[in-house]
Image 1 (cartoon, helix red, strand yellow):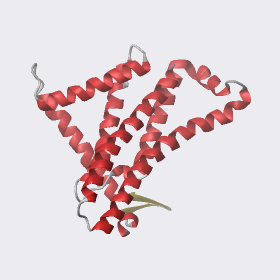
Image 2: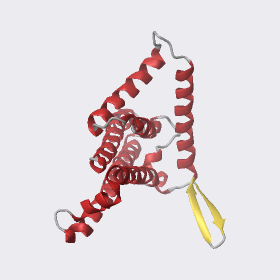
Image 3: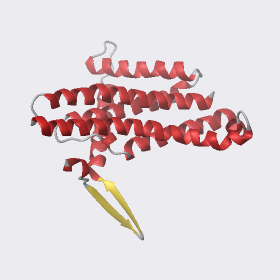
Image 4: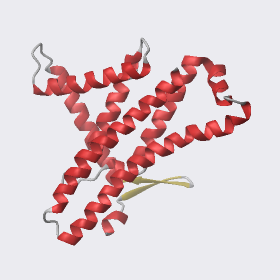
Length: 224
């Protein structure tokens, strides 16, 4: 059980402030980003009229999320959001899957990762809302249905970030705890590989998709 409490961290002292970095999370995140960059470069350099296996996978992913963004936003320039949504899903998907590989850990098991993604979606959604409605129109919506409801509406928007972030973190961390406990009980024999497949592949995929779609919905709500 010590694996749950051991954190490989690095402290950077800047004047009177100390910044603590989770080294394991940073390394896992860099590995995922490097893989995605390499995958996109390889596919983009081998684009053909008759697609190969990698190009087919890339076209399937991009096409699927392009259609989802189009249906959700219902605006002409919806494609300026498509890369964001597609990249967010792929990053979270690989972040949830990477724990299946021995000696590697999920970045989403660290609350900072899902919370950071949630804050990014929050900022983008509200920035898009201000651009679409103007500052006056954007602020007026917080006073609906009555002006004294503004504080509750603000709390509701902040709660969205907390909700999607802790949902993703809780599911991934919960799966890791269950796998670790069962592994100690049955000595890493039969059940842990099944649990890794279930929590890593199935639950990881579902949670990445849910997080991504909720981010898309939040953007849609703000710009309409």
